[in-house]
Length: 324
Ligand code: SF4
Image (tube, rainbow, N blue to C red):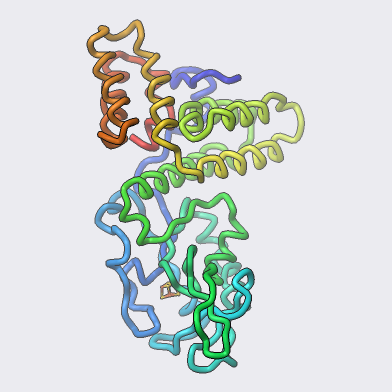
């Protein structure tokens, strides 16, 4: 098992610094303020743009405009099998843009290769990720829900890319969870991908220790085992490792998981801090665990104490850098 990374160790210096903000993400263009909706409007109020200012840099994409549907345009809707719906015209069902929307992903390869997340517009037959209405009956009534055609194609082609719907990001916990995954994706893309040396992989994994522990203790052990033998095809091992890591991080950590990781991190202060101050941290972690404080409270306290105590090895943990 790899131990916590030390920022001053040779392993840590194998990686560039943790990403600086802002980080590039793709965004449905109507959320970014583009007047690209079927009615000529935008939906810039449908995501917390102010809360994300300075944190993300938006790369707008409108697939419906991209395939030449124009503005304004006749609206489309999802119809048919919810597992494989078609995007057809609302007024004229003979219009079917499914294949064009799927193919449009390939034309955006350069942009999608250069971003670390994607925020989609909710409920859109092209961009929605969850619960987009799918109509089936003769009367066109909604019978099920599915995923927008373009969003589904992006997610199929890039299963490790963090995605979220704009409206869900108004929830602080959802936003923190999404941004954490964006930062980890950026760090991997900038620091490990393309140069898969064993030292880089080990350094990356060491930095992930408490982050993964917050989400799943068994996953950290499983990921460590994946890197136990790096004498073979390192790029293939790295690809499997990153896929497993992003799947693990896609599941939100519970309060208990965060409290466990924070408590283990606080252990780095054992011989560095008076007992009263350590008690203050323990109380703050417990307040968070019981739902009486936000995650930022014990995390902020812990970061301050670790820095003041010169516990450099723990301060470099991605858990604190990505959630802190
Ligand atoms: S939801 Fe997607 S397709 Fe619709 S206007 Fe916004 S960016 Fe364009």
